Image (cartoon, rainbow, N blue to C red):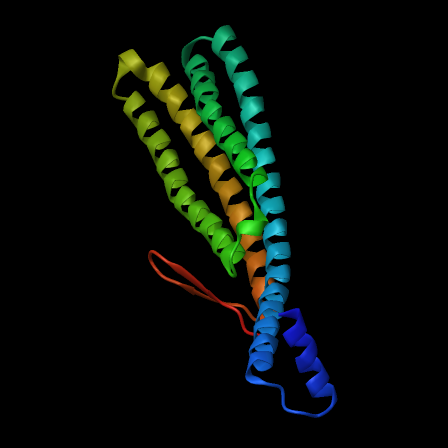
Length: 215
């Protein structure tokens, strides 16, 4: 291929028409260079996307560790609704810590060499979608907490448990709503800036995401 490419370049330099094989090699090399060039800014974009996500996961992990520590202490030191409030905080944030740890580990295993054209943008959009779905769940957590507080007024035997768990769910759901909303807005702004700078267009459907690169 290198010999054919050299002959083609000589033909161009001498203002002669290259042969069909030489033309094919020139077009193939041009296509490869275009794809490689288009993937470079995209991979840089996705690296920055992962950096934002990892920072968010570290914030979530820090919140989880703080709640596990205070939850364990409060669970052992307090009685009544405060005991159940701290108990739920403890259990809830063991899950948060697991999610943050898994996300950081999974992101660290990312092999950019296996990415095809548009894969970085598709992965970024999936993260945005997950955050939007999470926020729907977060509102459900807050609503469940309010429901438990309401139930406490009708169940004297479990008033402390319902109020403690309810207050915890409102707190944790509220934090996660703010957290997911902030992370979503940061990632969305990053994506819009990238699309504006590169001319990449995104076609998003219910179960698919298409990416088109304009050279």
